[in-house]
Every structure is written in C-alpha cells, then in structure tokens.
Length: 62
Figure 1 (tube, rainbow, N blue to C red):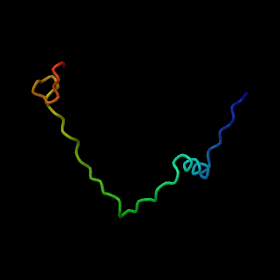
Figure 2 (cartoon, rainbow, N blue to C red):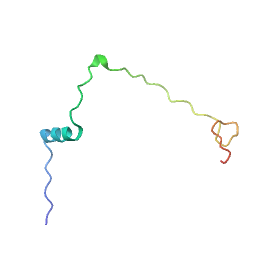
Figure 3 (cartoon, rainbow, N blue to C red):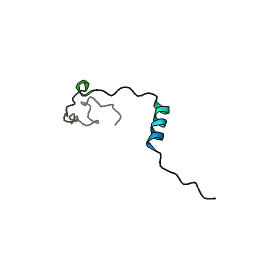
Figure 4 (cartoon, rainbow, N blue to C red):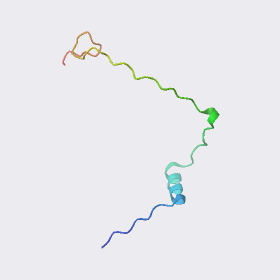
C-alpha cells in the first residue's frame, strides 16, 4: 500500500486553520503606536570566580 501524496495547503486553507486555532487576530498596531528599540551592549560578567568566598555567587561547596 502506497502512502497518499500530500498536496500543499492553499492560502485559504491556511487562513482557515489559523482562525480555528487562534480565533480573530487583533487589529494591526499602527506605526505611530510602535515603540522604537535601542541596542545595548551585553552586561559585563562578574570577574570573581564562583569558588572565591568574596564572590556574591559563592555557595561554599564548589
């Protein structure tokens, strides 16, 4: 017995399945209501190792 060939979903079928799964989507946010994001640098790592009792991350059983 050969498996059935799978046909790609049409855009209308995909839209129906999205609606069934998620319901009505909210209105799109207009560009003037969007928030601008700003890239920042990564936080610096604590140079004190975990095995140092002076480290705030020291647990005593390293």
